[in-house]
Length: 130
Image (cartoon, rainbow, N blue to C red; front, side, top):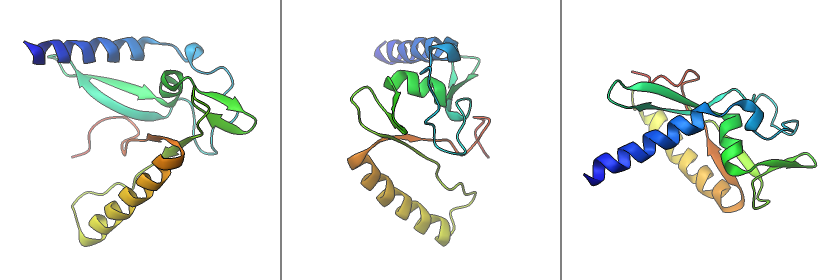
């Protein structure tokens, strides 16, 4: 029963977040990093028995963080700077891929000490990659 309740709460929260319009995102997105759009996919998850794909965008994540611009810096509700992180995306776990993942983990640990880090998905559509 606890599992069903937890799944239901996640589904409600995800559906609620996905339903928010971009007008509810921070109104001034002029301080977004170059190459990043408010409509870019941050993450996606399958919801419900039918496995409906719910995509979470940069704008929605910024709204959740209470983000705003302080000068040219994007900050969360606690005035902590926000950084977006796009991981390298690999297929098979080669030696190079494993070493790159190790470096990414170290870099992320370092970034998280100073910033609010928003990790981006490898898949721009949100669909899982095979």
